[in-house]
Image 1 (spheres, helix red, strand yellow):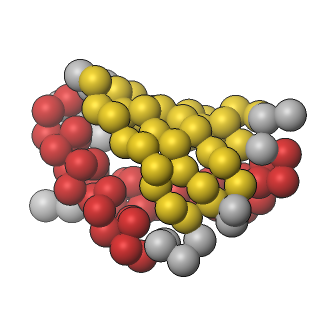
Image 2: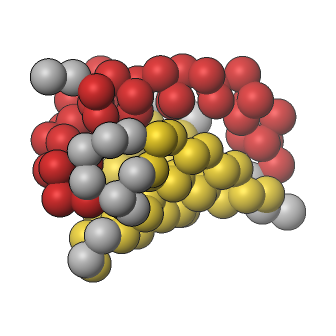
Image 3: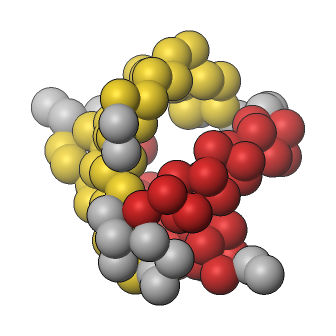
Length: 103
């Protein structure tokens, strides 16, 4: 059964700039992690990104919501990946924070 994995990353950029940086940074994530994940769908609707991907051959879906002062990532993980989620949470938070704080 899928389990939600949620990470909230604070920022001081405002919605528009945070969304712009996320859009720019997502391409580098694809190239850097292309061996373990493949993005199948990425749909922006206002301040929300809905996505579907395959990570370690497991289907994953989720959303990224951009707010004035934080970004909220929610991913539904299959049980196989749910066990790894805690270990990668710090990496996800650090990578997102770099995208949102980089000058």
